[in-house]
Length: 341
Image (cartoon, rainbow, N blue to C red; front, side, top):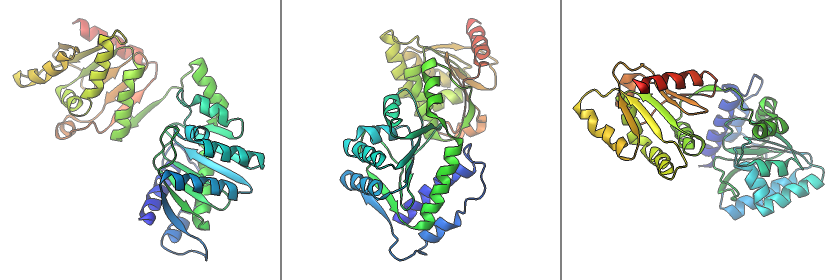
């Protein structure tokens, strides 16, 4: 079982490094880790999966204590809260720093973890990387990885390896991520000054799509939507509770609500439309709507770019264009004009 999990973790990190926005290097020898996984090891080397928060915390502290040179860490946005919010691990990091260990940390810095990141910066070189996921740490002789991190909670399970082929490969993966990450000071300045980088991307992972849409309940002031009935149907099947949450905030005067422009095809669509209207969403039926589906807030544009045939057979939105480019204002204006018709 540990070989399968190690294989999946290595594949994820290789994909981030080789095919994503993170890597331009081409000299990482991925065959090394496969050799180790398939049992080609030196004497005394091992790879194992560790379960239970007490055992994983003990292993993290052991690896921290074992290193005499460096600790390189890559985590999602929850990682800093574990490093600085779980007392034994925090003490381990500070002790390593006092011993002169070079600590480098890559994470996604945001409003939620800012205080943990600032505390980390006192003992570590910290950098920011968008959309960081999972977690791994590598020293000069050992490697740790996990797929699941929760805020200020001990790690539930870890993959551990001291197989040098794996360690060396993950060292190179970390270096490629480090080169693409930006200094923490730059990211923190962006957050505090409200200077958001312009970003346009296509998301084709349902969990990421759901996360982005769910965040609208906390970050948006009003939602303006233009869609066909297929998108309304997909929304009801997989996102309806998010819209209910937004409308609950509207009822309590913490949100300006949702306005939805749609083209109703016949009597069979009316029942579904009424389900949305029953929770307070304002819907206007307009013929000859634009082909592309849009959701616009005061800050973001979301566009479902699936074909009509694909959407008809699906129960979830499969891809989504997300952007904070200033052209959003023009889209908002167009939707306002549609609403007035």
